[in-house]
Length: 481
Ligand SMILES: Nc1ncnc2c1ncn2[C@@H]1O[C@H](COP(=O)(O)OP(=O)(O)OP(=O)(O)O)[C@@H](O)[C@H]1O
Ligand SMILES: [Mg+2]
Image (cartoon, rainbow, N blue to C red; front, side, top):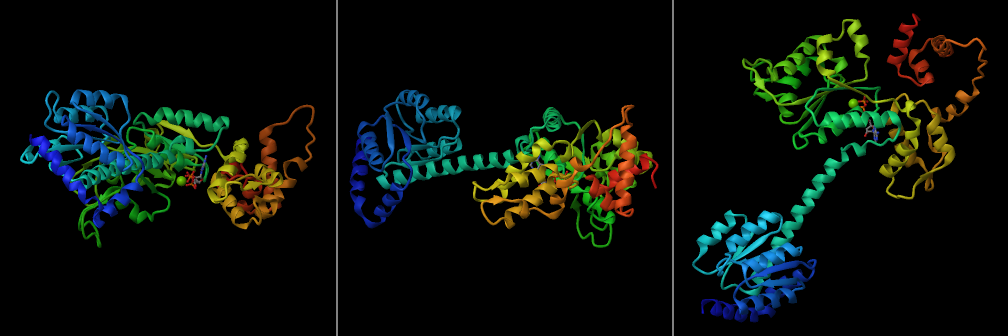
């Protein structure tokens, strides 16, 4: 009888269907994507009225007259929302709620409660129901509640997808390259990502060291934690210690309050110590201590703060060379170089150039049909790329701005690339029958390049397609002054 009268009130109130306020909400509903709703109620007349109204609003409705039947339907179909009465003979609405959430926690469940049983509604909310409606309710209330539930669920889903997309950008597949050296380094990185091992990434400037570090982080169990990068070469030496380890109030003039350092900010995640090769020797000792003790000492602080952080270090310097010169601690090197990964320079993997060119064309051009002329691509392929992928990226960005038509032409590339056309092929080499010493040849090329550029190392290095530190290193190796 109680249920019957509730149904009557429901039908009666739906007579206000054409009131202006309700018309608005109905109009809003009609713009909503058709949803699939599972309706469970043992009250025949109320169930039919609800089914009628929801169907009329454009939803696809399946009905069940018991909890058991409802669950069977739920298992077979894909529903955007479930609405269930709480009080039913046999399986109760609360049990339905528990089972539905067990199978798919994302589907919102709306409970129907009778007037006076508000406690059970509260309990249902605690158990994860999205909302409840109290009998008697009108058709608008029912629809609006369901609409809100479905909309929230969609937003939640979009959020999850968005988050996945953000993470995806840093998955290894965002590192473009199919060449053997890249495949090798990615394969190794994939394996170390799963561990907590400290990794040292070496490679020339612009080779993608930071990109690789992010890839390792987002493929590790720490992916939900922070990724914090600090460039040891870019921060003034006097600030670096407090940036890394934080400080306590009064530690120095201007330290008005306690401040956490980058290590603490990376708690639960990964810290990238970028350009570690440039780190002052006294700070190297402090980093070593962090790696050994897994604690940091804030500047001016009395007690060590424990940190749970994975360390990745990167450098474009030749650290072994720095060790030999007494500029880098060998014990720190051993600690950070548990796994060493080397990002190959672009000139060692020219087959990746067309792929990267395409990738950057897409990145810098909204029009997906933008292409590149073969002549321009050939120039890009034969250039030395001392600045590696970063340099290629900026060349492609510039060309995308300069290009007149739909394709990048040779004219859109910087002059330094066009000169390269008369490159290696034009060197006439007479190879003697008795063989040559490659090192001798390299040495003489370096000497010739230096002569050509009147001893200017930067320009000679650029001419040879190597970095200045590499040139200096080679010059020292060959005993050239
Ligand atoms: N394989 C790649 N695929 C796509 N983009 C790349 C790749 N390698 C590098 N890049 C891009 O090139 C730029 C330089 O990369 P990144 O900053 O990771 O290099 P780096 O080695 O840390 O450079 P630096 O030594 O100058 O700090 C970034 O914009 C990065 O997104
Ligand atoms: Mg970097």
